[in-house]
Amino acid sequence: MVKDTMQTLTQQPFEDYRASLLTRVKRLVVKVGSGVLTGPQGLNLSVINDLSTCIFEIKQKGIQVILVSSGAIASGLKKLRFTCKPKTVSEKQALAAVGQASLIMAYERAFGRFGQKVAQVLLTRDDLTNRRRYLNARNTLITLLSLDIVPIINENDTVVVDEIKFGDNDNLSALVTNMMDADLLVNLTDIDGLFDKDPRTNPDAELVGVVGKVDQRIRNFASVIPGFLGTGGMSSKIKAAQKLSLAGIPTIIANGLRKGILKEIFDGKEVGTLFLPRANGLCKRKHWIAFTKSPKGEIIVDQGAERAIVSNGKSLLPSGIIEVRGKFGVGDSVVITSEYGKNIAIGLVNYQASDIQRIKGMRTNQIKATLGFKYHDEVIHRDNLVLTSEAEEGIEECHFSN
Ligand code: GLU
Image: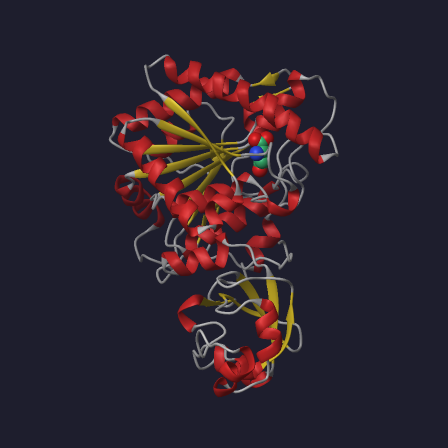
């Protein structure tokens, strides 16, 4: 087993750290991928039964559990006897609608064996990017947990199209874990964890037991080949783990096809790959700005503004702005790019795009005369800005989705 450098939270040996981490878990998010939940005949009921048994047992230790479950599209696919994943969005949406019903029914039955109640929660990206809806979703989940219910979350695939999707359930589970202040994400997939090579093609591939920091070497380890039915492959799991590490939350990626895997993890067995949390992570709000809101536009700045923002911790003023791209409103998030095309930060704007067009390059004392009003001196205040380097390059590309 390969062990990566541990330059984070602890000087403890890895095994001790893992054990003490597990004893501190009070709220857990478990994510299960389609490749684990579905087989050639459709939903894999023995996996679902095993998972629900383990989750029920973990709950008996006083740990709250939230399940993020994929498998709707894959299950709908089998149910409607499609031979491969359809290409059109509307067909995928239809499959998700059919499959989600079977999925939740299977969980109801499996958890029902112990009298454990479950709830279906279908989220869209808008539910988390809009601060009010984000807080609503969070309150509902907190209420479900306080009623001793296991929330089972999936993306509401039936109503979203690609441009407004979370991307994949790895990302969704990371955002939910952070939103819910959970102590750990267990991401169950169809291989044992992160390997130094693709184990499907390299018999000498070694499992990486612990990752201190997601760097280029770790990203290279991640196979970019997605599973047949799942969406993201190992790369998206690593991105999700990195996001959580930046929020100070650990992740374990493990094999959900291995019977009793959750029990093994909570019994302290060294299975899967543990991603350590970073000691000085982003605060919750900055994490939300960096990772949950999707950027709606781009502001290109000159070298003076780049220096002020990156090296001197300053806000973005109109004077340093060269160009504005995309249509966005007050409070939307935009990417800040240097004049040489380097993505340097992301932040929430105080002015809409068309107003920034008019005040770009100006001094702050010219804002009022030009627009007829002035909300703030800053186009993006420092408190609402996250440097790309702070987010370890994890900030999303800008898609100008409006
Ligand atoms: N939401 C999709 C489904 O339930 C899965 C997305 C994913 O696996 O990342 O089918």
